[in-house]
Length: 303
Image 1 (cartoon, rainbow, N blue to C red):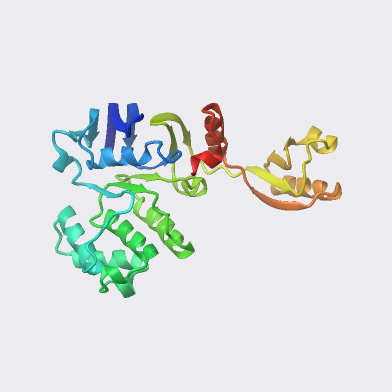
Image 2: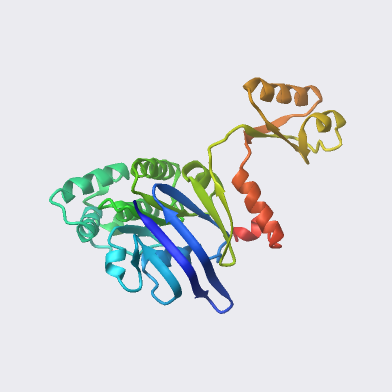
């Protein structure tokens, strides 16, 4: 089992803000999401866990090892992609991954692992090319490879889907599902992408102004639906009496698909056009509630 423990952690973030974690305990297997506005402390938290930042108050233990006292041993089984890493431009993707993999673990099969990783990343045809020939999205995919090469049991990813096109996003999601199989992995993903976090994570922590303000377990429940119509329907008594109505949306919990079909048909019969139907995001709902309590908006959170 892999473990991460934080106790009474305090770290200044700029002149006015600080990260304050009284207690955080993470145990494998888990894919844990970090959600919060820019400047909330997500990247700072990942930097602390990764050992990139050594100046802080409190205790951080990785697999029972104090990161201040035994940093090298504590992070030996940890891979990370934090913010936008800079690589030497005149090595190939293959050389970069092999170098990092050999640092992480000694293996006489590292060449084979590097080739497999490049294939998973969709970069087999560019593996021997120097990094200055890579596009921004290709560098981001290669950075993901650098985080997972050598099969670390703890993986920290900071905004991993930024700069990825649709193909890159699919590669990333498939990669996370693939490497999360088993009992040893802790994968922590910091992101603004609520849909992606709900799709991949078992649990999400919401961080605002350096503090943990809420957590939500993701159970994959898709029974709550939102039907969006072309105009406000709050004044329609027929729909109000039967459904949960909010502005131009109907929120409905369904047990059978026919209940959704009936709600759509009833709305159409009353002269409303259906704009879309989607699963209700409980994570988005909780996040918006917390932002509202904090006097913030969803627009502020992504500025």
